Structure formats: C-alpha cells, structure tokens
Image 1: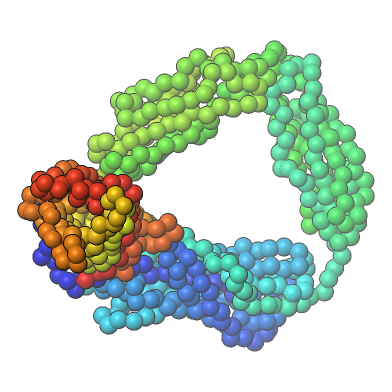
Image 2: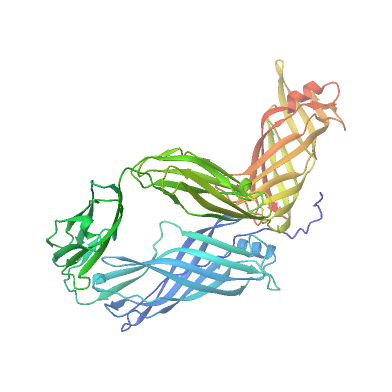
Length: 603
C-alpha cells in the first residue's frame, strides 16, 4: 500500500461541538432579572477521547416567587464557545454545519426538598467558519414552570447540572458527515470546583402548620409461608409535616383479610416522629392470599393510606424459580465485536432449588456462549448466568436459554435471546503526519536524531489505521569501553520498512506497531583524531526486523487534528554483512532497552 501522495493541507480532527442547557422559573407578579453564568464541562467523544467545552448561559429569572402560583416559562439562551481544534476537525471530515439538541438535568433546591427538572434546547444549523479561530454555537429553549408549595417557603436555589448532547454535523449537500463524528450522543460532566448557582429565589407565602403522613412501603410481599406457620413484616409510619399527626385507625380488609393479623403501635406522632404497624401472615391452607392494610390519620390531604398485602401459603417446603430478565436482546453489534448480559435465577421459595441443566437451543444457539455457577440455589438466594455473543456474520441470531430445575410448577423455563450483527461502513481519512524525535541506543549511550513522515489511512468508524512510515537517513556518535580505553565512533544509519505500520486510535489513545530493518552503510572510528572507516556497506543491516511498539502517554489525548507524542522501548537485533569488524559494530549498536520518542504533527 502506498499513501505518499496526500494533500499536505490535511491537518487534524478535533472534538465535536457541545452545547449546554439550564432551567429557570419566576413568579408571575415579580419582574425578571437578567442572570448569566459560564461553566466548563468535559464530554467523551469517539475517536478523540474526552474534550473540554465552555458554555455561556443566560436567562431572565425573577428573584421572587409565590406559593401556589406557577412560575411562567422563560426562554433560556446558551452560547457554546467552540475552539479552533474542533472547527478544524469538523472541516477535516467535510462538515459545513452543525445542529442538534442539548438536554440539561438541573435542580431547584428549596428548604425541604429538591426538584429535578429537565430542559431541552434546540441547536439550529450553525455554519462552521472556514477561517481559523473560535466560533459560537447558539442554543435556545424554554424552561418549564415550577409550582412552589408551603414546604418551599424560604430561599430556593437554581443550580445547573449535567447535560447530554445529541449532535449532527452535515456536509455542504446536507448529508451527515462520516462516522463516528457525523452523529454523536454523549453525556457531559460538569468540572468540579465551579459555582453552578444560577439564581436564588425567595419563595413567599404564609406558613401553615399541617400534619403529613408517610409510609415506607406501598406493598408488603410475604412470599411462601408454610401452612400453620407465620411470617411478620413491619410498615413504618412517619409524620413529615409541621403539626401533630393522629393515627386514628388501622385495619386490614379484603377477601383474604382473615389470613393476616395486625398489631398497631401508632397513636399521635409529633413532627418527624415515626411508629410501626406490624402485619403477620398466617396461612392455614395452600394458595395465594391478598388483602389491603388501610391506615387512617388526621392528614387532611391524605386521610387514608393503603398498603397492599400478598402472601402464598404452601403445604410443604418447595422451591420457586424466577428469572430476571425474562428475555434478552443484546441489540446491534458490529462485526468482530462482542456483547454480554447476565440472567439471574432467583429462588423465592422456602426450599433449596436444584438446577438440573442450563443450555442454549434454537437456530442461533451456536452464536451464543454461556457461563454459570448455578447448581443449587438456597431459599431467597440467587445465582447468575453470563450470556455472551460475538458478531461473526451479518444477520439476526435467535435462540432460547433453557433452564431446567426442581421447581414442581415450572420445571422448565425458556428465556428468549436475540442479537443482530451488522457491518459498519467504514469512513476513511487520509492523513500526513510529520515526525521528529530521537532514539537512544543503550549499548553505547548514543542518540540518533529522527525526522521523517508517516502517511496514514484512518478508518474513523473502527478506529484502526495502516500507514507508510518513512524515516530520513541519520547519523550519530557512539562510544564503547574497549579494554582500558574508550572507543569513539560515528555511524550513518538508514531505516527500511519491513511491514506496513498498523495500529489503533480509540478515544484519544494511539497504539502502533512498526517493523523495519536498520541499515548501517558507514561506520568510522577516530584514530589519533582522524576518522577511519571500519565497516558498514550496502548489505550491512540487522538480521531480523526491529519490532517497535509505540503508544501515546496515559491520560493524554492524541488527535489527528493536533498530533501528539508517542514513545516506546525496543530491542535492536544483531547486525550482519558489515565486514571484518561486524562483532565490534554489534557492541556499539545492538541489544535491548533502547528507547524512542516521536512528536507527530499534521502536515
């Protein structure tokens, strides 16, 4: 493969565009205030890794609200400042405009509660400039209304939270730009240490002392209980109001009320005080039983609270199998990639469940593999089956996970399993990178300067590349200890590729492998201050190719848009065909522990 004839104006691929949203509200009787804030986020992007964005947010938000009066909706504006790397990267894949939506997850924090609020902002089609420098991407949306209650009287804060970006970059003809940059869905994290307070609102209203009832569960499930025995559960009742709460009554009703017994420990509760209502399930025969526990109180807004009661009477200890989930869809998986999911077997019975077999069946059974530790499952315990799939051929695979057990009512359970393998149409990008750096030869302590270029064909979707590596001829000075003196030498060195350079660039992490022969056409030593040629020649080269693995540093993003630094450690094989002093030359150059560091820059 030859990639040398590249357009040298090819530069780099930068981070995708990001935008941010917020929520806002205000009282209908209060005038709005102009508020603004600037926040920094980090967003993970395909191919180029985590990138920073900065957003300038503004809105008109009143500083006063009234209990019982919904705040009106207010328009919110966000301006995202996009750096030149992102602009260059978008242009590199042929993008003309960027558009999409931003979803912000924010909070209103009052004296007694926290309200979650989601705001959607639209990013209109925005032209990406041809000239270098930053540019702005606008986004607008409406903040939904907020209804404050008596519990919110006091100071309320509006704070900006995290955001999700759904962006599309388009080419001049309106088509979506090549994957994976063309369409991006990413969850952004707000950088710590920032003041994300947008506005403080004073919530006005007359505080009324009221009792409020709260129970810790909406239903009580007793599971299997052997006939003639019993099981007890507790419902906790709490007064979350600001005045005394009277528990006036607690009663069990329904068709099977006689299977449940009640022990009510509740009377009058002060604010924030709790009490217990104990319920006992005592079946006399087998079968499922259900009833309703009703707790009555002086809470005017919620005078009666219902708690559903269920249980099953069994004549003798028995296992009861359950699976979660009841079906598995691993979705669409690209060829060569894998996906997995866990299926949990639960025993809700009161006897140990024996797992007789776990197997896959159906037309696509061979496309899935499973691993499990399920042999016996104690009462109220569980075990896990790991189901795996590797996409080897395009198409849909359907199978069934069949579980056979000692459950007398469900001796065999079948869990439908499906997955679809697809082939990603790769979008390729040609890049020309200049290289500059050096390699340290440990045997003699010498350093060779390195210059050259690497012509790369990058598959954006897969994150893989192939490249032609060209390193210019170079020379260096070396020194070795010989008997009781030190011998100094100079050598001309050339590099001849043995294989195409290959590697990956995934989420900003670059890894590459190069194999090349090292030739030494000329070596001279200094005798009485004068150079004396002692070896080399057109056939003087390493016996085997040098195998060099290069990688970008951990924690640093390597981007084709900006380049970066790669480094590695390698062994230099023995030289041959270098004349009578081949052995001496090997003392200068060959051995392990050699290091290399290169700066790669888009051309």
